Length: 149
Image 1 (cartoon, rainbow, N blue to C red):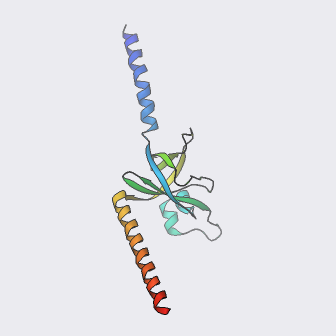
Image 2 (image 1 turned 135 degrees about the vertical axis):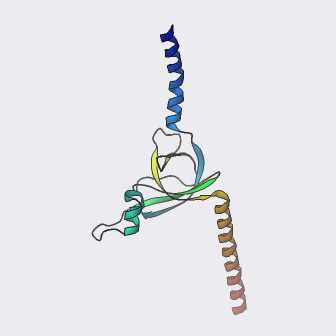
Image 3 (image 1 turned 90 degrees about the vertical axis):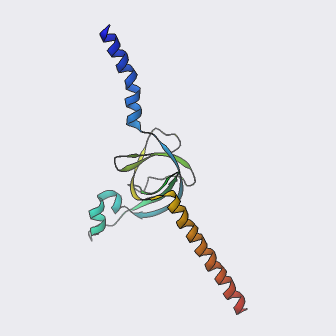
């Protein structure tokens, strides 16, 4: 009877351990992509700050801006073939100082290095400031064009 009880307890705890291993996914939207230097994602902080050796050509790796509900991440792929579609809602989780991304309910996760993180309200404020600066610059350009005419 004791063995049966232990088996039941063990059986019930296995799905919980598996769920803990997988982690809870958050949802986010990729709003920006650019190709950047891979040095940050491959070799860490010291190599990135120390510079690349002269004989090595830096690779181009994708750098994404991922906007979630509370935090905005700038993540860098480890190779040039780690592509994520823009404007798609993706599932992600933080795993061992990296961001594990799952696109379109695929079974495979892609790992990205976290380059920057900022709280969402702060990021929204910066974006508003940039938009205000752009509209002010545009208005000044329009006024300058009209005065020349």
